[in-house]
Image 1 (cartoon, rainbow, N blue to C red):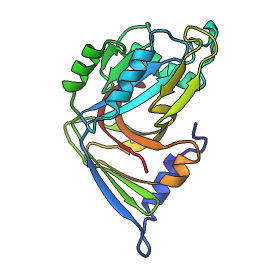
Image 2 (image 1 turned 90 degrees about the vertical axis):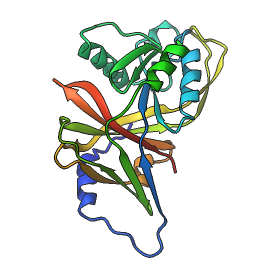
Image 3 (image 1 turned 45 degrees about the horizontal axis):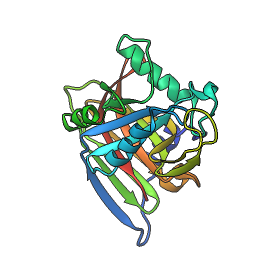
Image 4 (image 1 turned 30 degrees about the vertical axis):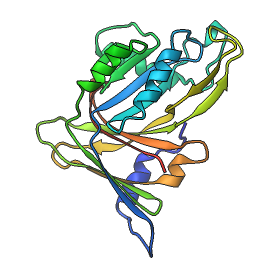
Length: 245
């Protein structure tokens, strides 16, 4: 996970942004229709089809795909090498926001609002195809500095801007548990999630990140997710984008 709080860093950079010389510059205007969060586990026999489906969805330009590995199956014989308690807590928070206490794997959540059994390919694809996000996001890279811009929209309530780091591929040989003997390829593996700032309905959001520092040695990409909260619980996702150097 990222250990350094980034909200203060982002605010400081927002006031001190400049580009010198012939630094590389690139801009993306991103309007994905869906953020697909898969809650999965290496110790879950039902999860490999969902993992494969997420890999396919990640190839779509209109989808931001993220795999959150949970830790509550670690007791059944294999400890998931990517699992974090925080990711299990996120899934529980989604369930609570819907008035439920039930969590399971594989579970897909689309745009923070629609939950689907992650291995039901047709249902997942239908949920994605019907999804939409109300805001676009601009990502501009100048040298190593990534600028994130999300416009205001007065009829929406304020939201949190999240930074999510991930590895786009990881190979794992599973030696015990329900998937013993399998060599798995995992994609879009989330390694950390942290508040970056706020999006406000009247002013939008504009933040800057030092991409190299955020990625570090292990991560290969980042996702920026703008998500509303309801009573401290996750709500609707308003905008999202992903960047891989």
